[in-house]
Image (cartoon, rainbow, N blue to C red; front, side, top):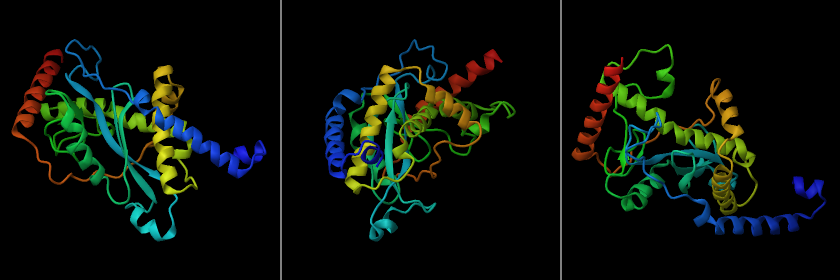
Length: 277
């Protein structure tokens, strides 16, 4: 509408070139989506050095859509929004390596697809950090259930970790927060993701994909991002990307091997923490 009225162009012309540009951006997805690099053994990054072989983190977010009235019940979330589920997987630099817009209902379907397709191609020893909606199994390292986890529970005035499960969860959430920050920066940069766009659903999904790709391009060209500073200011008062709690993924169970790996890793991390205290 801005282009149509400010530059006095017909709606047909604006629509035509929107789709031309959209097609061009999506056609460069192989250039814009990055290939994740595992955390090296000699990493000194305070967030990631504990997670050798980790490729990044994953989560899903809601983006509001405009859909026909007859379809609204299928797209309605538990909070009453008409939204689409988008699964995002990013590396430690907040660049997306995988994006999958879903449809109505919970995020379980698209996450299940990721677990059984993309994750199956991971090299042995590589994994992503996920929340408790995932099983602690091949390709996914998740926190302990029943212990403190979210960043708000690890503020300056909170109690220090008292056991290896607490300490592991603290390290895990500080690293996995990269995906929440990536979603926050993405939505702050592209206003179309914060409000409803009156396009057909298929076009809206393509616009969402284009925003993710352009985010990667900008991130690669501009490592120092002013939106991150804005995100820190906003985050001190409220959640930038408020998503509903994740559901468990049916059909995927924790494996003894990954539970043992997590236990050994968490004990080693806690022992180092205690030795420096």
